[in-house]
Image (cartoon, rainbow, N blue to C red; front, side, top):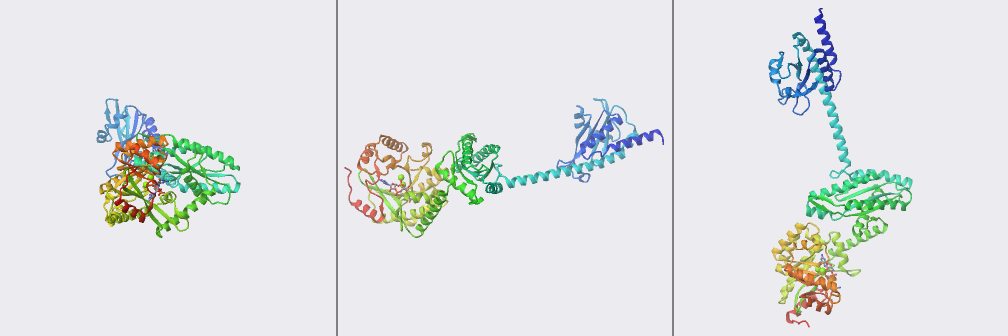
Length: 614
Ligand code: C2E
Ligand code: MG
Ligand code: MG
């Protein structure tokens, strides 16, 4: 064997050794390219590889699917001019195959060597590379192709493992976290609570669950849209997350409710409570900070209740239930230090449940009745009446509507009860019409709760009741309070407008006691304002009430709405109201709410006589 052959074999041997030294494609190629550079005395060497449509370097078998393209992969030494070869002369190089192309710009020969099925090597050399050396490289390039293939497979495998791991981590995360806020979800929270609870029982160390409910969140989403609602939830969640630094676990429980676990607060209940109150004060502070969403700033308040656990007399689900009860209690009280669950709350809930049951029975057993309170003008003409619900409880006698209506509203029983009121009022109006109505008699109004108004079938319930009774819709009035607009503002306004078009008029009851601003009010398509009784009481002696009544009368004028004073209970109040310009009245001074039979008689008597106010 001559020297030349020997040196070629040794060259091949050296190249061969450099191939496959690493399973990572880049590392392996770098090692190989360095040997090329030194052994062939090259200026620069470049690798171009084929890429598949999916972005991964393709395997040899993927070829021919039409999605491959050659891309620059690696250059050594990395020279600025590399970009030239990028765009470049790959095509012309292809044509020349084994022949170098001389690049005048950089004064080098460019050799194109194919890595079978995988790409190209481009050698830059100031010198001509001998033909037999290039020939000797051919088996090396085949070996390089095989090594590329293994490395690519290995890389793809690693990538797939990573993708799978990531997917697994994602699934795990989703299973334990809330999709919107990234806080823990309820199930995961339960998983944290169980061991904390058991540990508490074992050691006697107090633990606590704090439940946070955002106030009037539904109103915000209903009026401002879900995107704003979501921004608020995410912002609050992020702020609460900051508390996690205090070794606290936080989860999103329901739409606008969060729960916090404070385990192991020590043996002293009073110390534990101090710590809890500190956390609650902090929560209140962070929740109340203004939240910016859709170019507006929102101030959200929250209600916070908590339950302690340290004894075996309760279960894990009790802890959650009690925190919920305490939070609901906080919705009414709103103390800044939250509300702690007490056993009395359970008793209250039991009583309420029993009462709700009684109301249900009352509806089935026909225990409800409608009373009518007449309304008069300043010439003592009867102009209408208000239908007021009465419940003659077989055991307790007459119940105050203030009490059962609130509970009926909370439990949604107001919906069937309200339907009964609507139908009965319409039937009673038909009876009155049949007997003949006095000249000035305008309408009978009934009270409608916000819960009724948002029912899908509210409009049809009212219209059917009117049609079935065969009355003129103009004889029926509906009283709503300003608070009716708290939820689903636009929808409610739409329904009111539709019923108004049908001929039914709306009045705003208890005017001046609600939350609404004048800006809100002007959107309510009502035609009558009812001044709340609290402003009528002692209006003759109380200058503040006098000023409020005067203002409401002016407002009515401004909005072109009629005004009626409620709860006029003596002639002094009446005289002052007349002096202030009020001409419609309802109150004990004129008549208490009375059973329908009595009201029929009153209307009949009015048909004949017209008293003039003295
Ligand atoms: P409201 O609609 O403001 O009804 C007026 C209330 O004031 C009635 O109380 C009436 O009896 C009382 N009132 C009228 N004049 C006087 C007065 O001169 N002095 C005093 N002390 N009170 C007077 P009531 O019947 O106890 O009803 C209380 C509230 O219960 C009503 O206030 C209304 O909000 C609600 N309510 C009554 N019936 C229904 C109903 O059918 N459906 C709904 N959703 N709510 C109703
Ligand atoms: Mg009313
Ligand atoms: Mg009222």
